[in-house]
Amino acid sequence: MRDDAGAEGAAAGPAAGFVEDSAAGAAAGEAAEGEEGAEEVLSESEFLVRLEEAEVLKAEGNDCFRRGDVEDALDSYERALERAPSALPGVDASKAAALSSEDPPTAMPEGVRRYAVEVEARATSLRAACHGNAAACHLRMARPEEALAHCDDAVYFDPQYSKVFLRRARARQLLGQAELAVKDVQKCIALDPTDEGARTMLAEVEREAQRQRAASQEEVMGKLKELGNGILGRFGMSLDHFKTSKNPDGSLGVSYEPPGAHSN
Image (cartoon, rainbow, N blue to C red; front, side, top):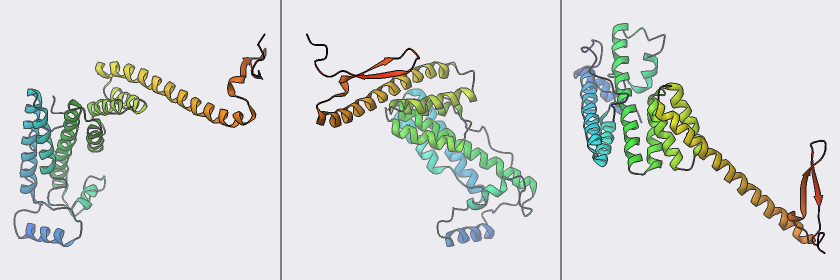
């Protein structure tokens, strides 16, 4: 199992300008606690420590998965997700989007802003990989609903994560959602045209989607026939007494043949 979207190594060196473990950091923490529902504000060092701990847990999960210890792997990925920081170091989550915009706030120097965005991207990649790998674990344990939820989360954090679209397709296939599975496999191929496994799966889910459409149409027609017979039955008639045929001009004709019309 690959590390997926996980980033390698830490960004080079801490940058000045973040809230540190100091009076400034304490003040930031108190401000966050005072706002109902506010995101936890971590100092730079706290952010990096938690990120590195989460990366270690993800690596442990990968090792477990390779050995076939799927439950232990899932536990490691879930603990990594719990430990992974979710906001930029020293910045409230509500302000995170502004830092990665084309017009950054003048209050933060460009070098500091760039460093903040880099480490935040590293955390985001970690979350995407852990959700994607957790989905793979749930698929191994025949839990498609849980796998689907993790795939949705992985796509949220990394919309270019091609392999997770394939995993989501498998989960949807197991849940009887072949039409949606086709779209996911097509997305995977669009992101990675070299994935031969995805092309093989596309043919598989397209056949299944066609079977599901046919079964659905047959079910609908059966219900319509049942409804029609219920109405016509009051007059001693049935839809079986109506026959269709093609007219010379190519149009469809309908004729009524009462019961016993062909009897001797």
